[in-house]
Amino acid sequence: MPAPARSILVPIANPASVRPLLALAAALATDGETLVPLVVVRPSASSGERAEALASVAEAEEVGAELAHRVAGRVLEADDVAEGVLSAVAADATALVLMGWRGQSSTTNVFGRLLDTIVGRCAAPLAVVRLGVVPFRRVLLPVSADHLLPGGDRGLDLAARLAARLDATTPQPATVLRTGARAVQLPPELERLGDRIHHDPRRTDQAVGAFARAEDVIVAPVAPTVSGLRAATTHLAWAAPEATLLVAIDAGPTREEGLAEAVDAAGVPAPVPSGPHDLRAVRIVVTARLPGDGVRPDDLGRVLRAAGATDQVMAWWPAGDPHPHVRATVTVEAPNVNAAIACVMEAVHDAPAFRGAEISYDVEPVVERG
Image (tube, rainbow, N blue to C red; front, side):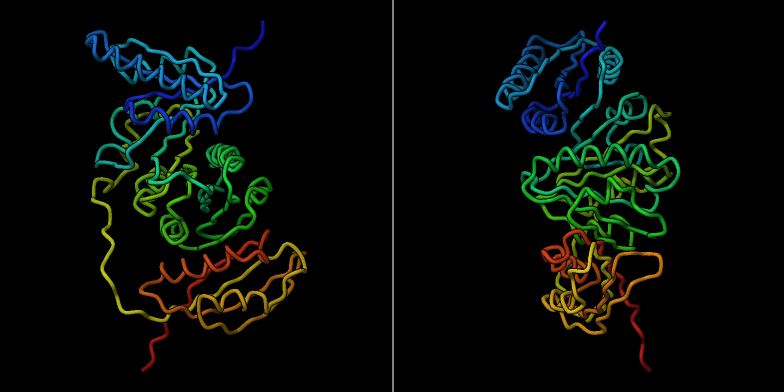
């Protein structure tokens, strides 16, 4: 007997999200996967609610036809919406569950009560997405040191696979953004994902806030730590409020009560951008590990001069590493560290000479002079 066809399940709660969610599901689907938009109605649903559910499924099938993708919509009756979604996951060969999220958390919920219940009990991988203000044109994959810990490979592997599929549909090359300590080598598939790797040793939300643009889709893996889910959701939603945020979860069924433990202070309002500040000098040490010998130290200095005054340019070949390294220090006039790093990252990222490089950014401590 042939194996059942694999599917991407797309629960629909908001009719306005049908088109963007189906388009995203089509971009994530591999050959042979069917898109299954699902609307769950309660037995007590009115005729108007049932008609709206059928209309949402019909619209989803129209979108699938426009995208030349196979769609098999369903309206399922269940006493509880979450139970209905979970029963659909169990009944089908579900490869991925794609759900929309408003990008807000509370003190007791990460994604909201309904989504938390599904996330906490779902046996299939999930992608929870907050849609951005504009269509995405570039994939950004943040990878923290926690993602490279033992046990973190499942969430990271899922995020990398989804990022690669989305990258095939975008006009700009994907970017890998490393954060935290860099003691562990990136897996080869991640090194090959983008045209260069940026490394910001600060927290992931700070690094994403400096680098992300409104036209990015941030594919966030969930690290296997207590704070991993919080770091991939609330903090990134705050850090990049205009970008599309896709949280990739492949931890298997967990106790749903445990989700609440991952959102300490999640109900605190998002930070409000402060007003204008006086500019101050921020010194950033930029180190690039190059893919070959084609880039000279002066090339880094030339690129960084677009951001500020540059000095201490040097090159060396570390023992045991076949790749040459170049380093320079740039002084940027900016209102804060994040703005300074953003300016430098943008200058280096837009430079064709550093395609294939891994670039690190370290802020020099301020030395008080007596």
